[in-house]
Structure formats: C-alpha cells, structure tokens
Image (cartoon, rainbow, N blue to C red):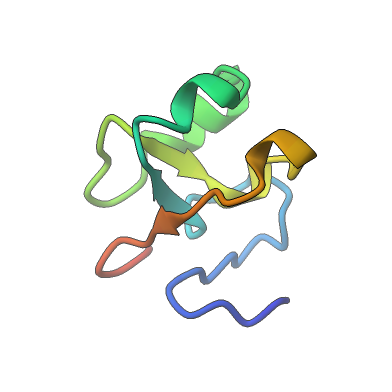
Length: 77
C-alpha cells in the first residue's frame, strides 16, 4: 500500500505470498528476529532467494532498525 517500487505485496502483509521479498544486508540480520515457520514456508516460493532474504511484511520496524536498507529482487512472483 506504500507504493514502494519492487515490493508488490500482493497479500497485503498477511504473510501469504512471497511478493514482498527483500534482501537484508548481513550486518542487519542479527538485529532481526529469526525467520518464523510461516515466513520460511513463503520464502520457499520466492524467486531468487538468497541468504539475506526476508519478507518485508514480517520485519517490524523499531528504533534499533533506524537506517535499515534493503534491496529488492529484479522481479517478484
């Protein structure tokens, strides 16, 4: 709903697809909670999954993530 280019987010943040996959830089990964079972299942369907792949809808923004930047895959589906 925020209109971020490269993040389709077809499920509206319900963790029911993988169209909001982002690549989180390795230095930020320890600050995020571990990938949950639902997110892991959805990432199985993500195109071009990488070690730092996360679903943007599952990253809760918090003060300790101020400055977090992510990259989007070339395409989502």
